[in-house]
Length: 115
Length: 112
Image (tube, rainbow over all chains, first blue to last red):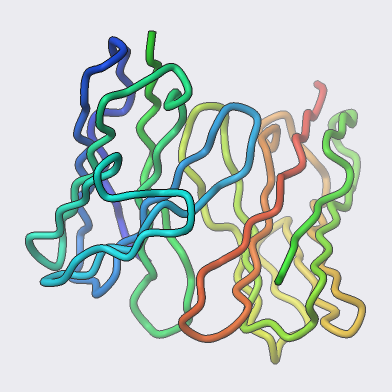
């Protein structure tokens, strides 16, 4: 298994500002995943973050809007830039657990409201 | 392209009832399937993971089955409790190293 801590757990932001979400894992992992969950919707993968290389973004997501850092094997950040009300979502950090089962574990999520 | 659906979208049952949540996927070639629970405004908690070679997995009052040929998985919850109230999502990994595809979830309410 994996224990994932996310900060902040929730925030209310003004339009046009940026916010950085932090994700800390209790073990070293190769890949970290960032998801978005818009109100009433299921999860959509934003990007996969590998340590030491550029993040891989999914269709519809760009680095300028969602820059990601991955400075080491236990930590990553996601920034939501130049926010608009449409960015109001839960943002979730995820990793695969140890043991090669492919099981996915999630943090508690960061609930952002953009006014 | 793999697509995942879940029926029903919402379900309300009295406490103590046994219930079944359904998950369907369009491509039977999968690597594994995982069931999650999500409380309102929170992250996802892993419930059960079924590898493609397995037929079912059990944890406490939960039992998940997998029928790849029909593209279906079910999550059986025995003796439901109000604390089981949450949204249940299933997710399918199409292949090794590929990303999970999530269903829309079933919102469960267990009434005392």
